[in-house]
Amino acid sequence: MENVYDKIIKKILLGEIKTKQELHREKIKLCKEKGIKKIPPDSEIIKNLPDTLADGEKEILLSLLRKKPVRSLSGVTVVAVMTSPADCPHGRCVPCPGGVKRNTPQSYTGHEPAAMRAAMHNFDPYKQTRSRIDQLKTVGHPVDKIDFIVMGGTFTARDPFYQEWFIKRCFDGLNGSHSRDLKEAQKKNETAESRCIGLTIETRPDWCRIQHIDKILEFGATRIELGVQTTFDSLLYKMKRGHTVTDTILATKLAKDAGLKVCYHMMPGLPGSTMDMDKESFRTIFEDPR
Image 1 (cartoon, rainbow, N blue to C red):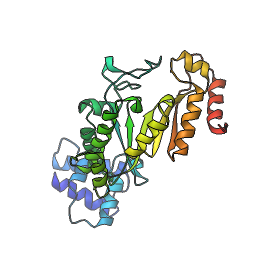
Image 2 (cartoon, one colour; image 1 turned 120 degrees about the vertical axis):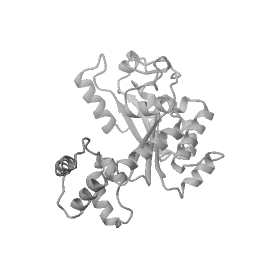
Image 3 (tube, rainbow, N blue to C red; image 1 turned 60 degrees about the vertical axis):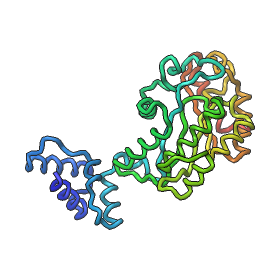
Image 4 (cartoon, rainbow, N blue to C red; image 1 turned 135 degrees about the vertical axis):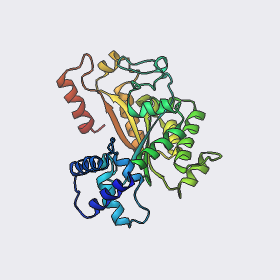
């Protein structure tokens, strides 16, 4: 098999293989010639790249061999981690597919890749982080700049000790070692092989107040994702969201004043909504000066 890898690597560097289609055809051809029944995945070729390659040669190979190259095209790689299943403080929204009874994080079905990875590792953020980084490395993505997304419901409503433990374990996962506390983990990460250059926290508008923002800033958060869903109070009430449009306006203002980037989760097509209402919601979030 190594001979097959060597031939493919050589042809890519010579410019004889330039596309995924040409690569696949070459793999089939070589496997037929060698009597190999299983076509090797690109990740196996990446694993067997010679150590003697120059940086430029390695990048030529990885640009063709890596899976979903757009994922890290900016030079930053996203790693999503999920918190353990826990009830939201307000109860349950009508459309919510997850929750403790289903052993899935709130708002998720459990079939999303990040949710399945989290369940496989018993929702341990350290193991989730290490697993994802190793996976991304295997398929040729750079893992030196990591943008974390903490998913799984209303993070700021979780026990403060759990919140700090979770973020610390995320940093430990990047560092590949355990630290005494969050501050030490953050300090280690400044010179780690995989550095956190962004941290996103998911929460609800009514759980994004000054005290919550101060805490997530200590964690190193750079962005917040708010479950806004719609700009109509009547729909929020019908969906049992437990917050109002006024909560969204206040949360957005407080987060932006604190220097956080703000992302909205919107849900067009909610029961009771219309296409005109959905369009009005999107017009409002982009044009309303509030």
